Length: 266
Ligand SMILES: [Ca+2]
Image 1 (cartoon, helix red, strand yellow):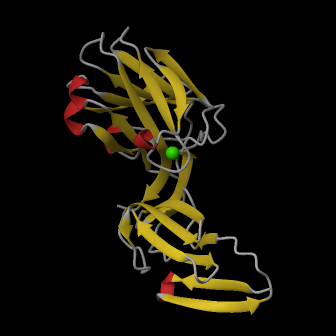
Image 2 (image 1 turned 90 degrees about the horizontal axis):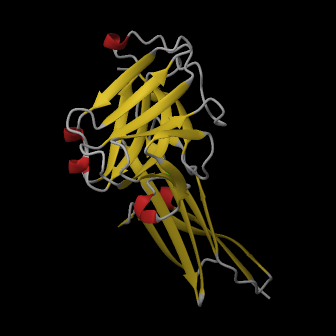
């Protein structure tokens, strides 16, 4: 009876056998520490990977490319995947995270592990998807089905959402991913509008033209501190994400993922 236990620390590009003890259990184990799924980091990170047993074949990729284990220091979205295989047994673990240099107060409102806390107006039906083609970050994504009955399609983040924030003053940015299958179908002047509804009944609107979007995933970053908006951010009742097509009869499935708030010192 023998046990093989191995620590692979890619931080130092070394494989270290740390223990040999009696047991013939050859279960394949993969453990990633140093980065957390769904997290955002304001400085470089170096993941630490543990694989057992030591003679397992190990594949490590970062965004699908071979990864040498060095510090990850550039702004971006990353998915680290470790796969260990021994005989017919295989184990894989993935962690998705962001590097956002100089950012503080990062607050993930929703990465859509589920779907709760949203309502709709006009032409929108919401559902939850885990189809990898339409998921940008950990968890799933929010699918909006626009049937073609109205040009406007509204998804509303409501104050009963578990992670809703009323006072936005600790944050000066809101960001999210949106996936359009065909951006040319969007209304030219206002393809997307983000509205912050205030208790007074007023709204603070941010509009984005069709030219801002490509087919597939787009990242939208809203400058909450835009001096032209006169937006004090102390009290917000709901946040509306409105998509408009040029033709009201256009049917379109589109997607949101990874809605977050943060502070970035300009
Ligand atoms: Ca997600």
